[in-house]
Length: 443
Ligand SMILES: [Zn+2]
Image (cartoon, rainbow, N blue to C red; front, side):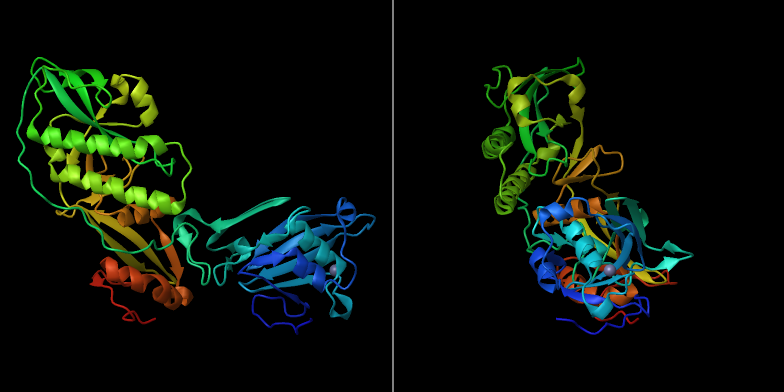
């Protein structure tokens, strides 16, 4: 069972480290721990007055203080996590090179009294956990006795870990999916009572909620340019007789109804990831259809961040109706890879055809990006674009890759991404940006 000490530069040279296998990457099973412990495994009652406290995490090594019932001395154990192994040492020296009681109990405590396993991925920062002037260079470590959090410092967003990838970013199923571009004729009608359209969208924190287009009846000011009174959402009501629909509006209303029928019944229903992705595609396709019917040319467009069920019950509240412009221009998603001294940063760039930068903001409905003002909205071409951008927003649009991990990252992420999106590379100390090509970056 015992393995010879593994020489690693992160390990103190003189300490003996006992090696335990981890299952399915980073998972320590209680059974494994019990099997390696030479004595009879400790039961729940004896665990009661035994506890461990996090002391530190430095240069990939986590330190725990272990207190054992009826033992006046506390022990310190140090452990190192890799995808398939856990190496642990104890200040008792582990006589006989056997997994000692202190390390056993400390790790048992990490698993928890009632659990069968613990995932140790948060202790795995290969080459990333390095200190400069006694401080972690890339990581922010927070320790509160029985709680520890190890995450990248804010400026690095999410940092790439070989075999573990990024924390908030995975490549979705990459596939091409674009809206149709049928042009339709738009005609304009200026009446006192008008038909407007509103994007009803819950905030992005509601992961499964999707935006729906809803027509409404409003009354304009005397000039006929601005809606001053919002009368009714027209999902379950007839359009008033004094509003004459244009042929485009007739088409748009059909699309609105389709969106509503698809989204409203499941608004608060739990769904599997696959169901959610399917629905995203269907609803986004309807949005593209609405754009093809020149939704952007409609005169009265608004956004309202509400639930669909509340729309059904209530009339539009003026303060919740924010007017907006929906821009018909095609949005482009590209990535910028910037080389720094010891790492690379990958970020997404969203632009309109004039190169103006667009972004996801908290004021932008899902499926849309907007200009900084948050007033002009642009529909994203695909669910894939939307999902990539939403994931990147969680990392403040910053993915950090240390140079020693670049090759691995390039093979597992960048190569695939470059088949679907243009990637621009900005080398260190060079103002000239070049188009990224696989294996063209030499370190
Ligand atoms: Zn010990």
